Length: 89
Image (tube, rainbow, N blue to C red; front, top):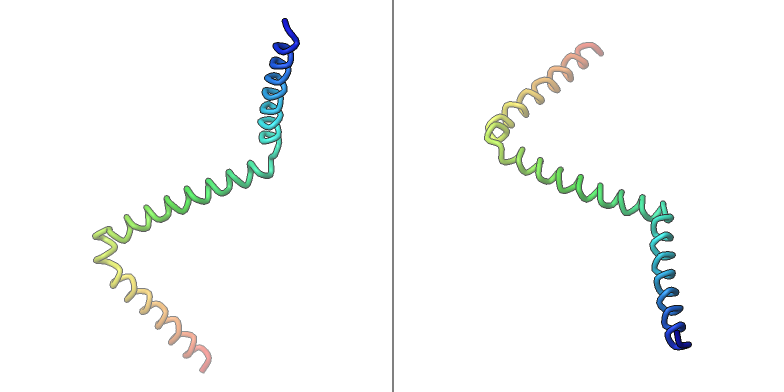
């Protein structure tokens, strides 16, 4: 082997070693990995929530029944308000 070939091999080995060190450093950075995983999970959760929300809004059952649910809620709230008012007097 000539000196030039040895130098090329040394340079190649240094480059590979540098890449390996960078990969190990990335794996060892737990905080950055945790943040990346949290961001990924957050994005997936938002996407799933949007999908489910859209399905619920498009549901014929919800579109027909929401006025009934609103009326029932107002009836319960009104009844409780009257009951509390009578209880005070």
